[in-house]
Length: 233
Image (tube, rainbow, N blue to C red; front, side, top):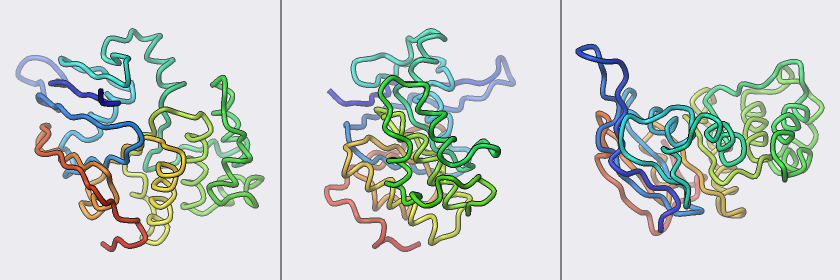
């Protein structure tokens, strides 16, 4: 059975004539340990889909599963626990606490789970061993994004959700961040979902889901995913 399952998911915002259907009969699967790139233009429904999977939004109809758990049936308390324990989030903007050091930002996330990875160890793994005592304002954009990734990884999440994680970064730094995400999946078996409007990134994925106008327009599997270092755009 697939690790992630979306079954005929619909999401409607508003009521009556003013309502908007953001997702319509969206169905797809993702296997454990895969890198899945969800690609589509702005407004296609990618972020809505990610928010439903991450427990930050609720669906209107359909069902969503992570492993044996039906996420779409969770009450508010169980959703909060799910977001805290099972999901790691990486956003376009880093959302670091400015008056805490890189290490303290990661420690903050590690304190909300029972079996976290050591924060200093995770910062070493993302290449910030010598910068962990710095505050966000003393770090470059790419370094701040690495702290955000370390913060997410320290929780040992089952699933890492990345919403345009390189959107605020320059080309070279963006490639470094994507290489880091690819490495985490390959070496630690982490399931990683990346949403993007950049179709060139589909080459790095094990699975590609294309979203158009709130529907799943296609799903394909790459038998031989390309290392991000070899991808140009």
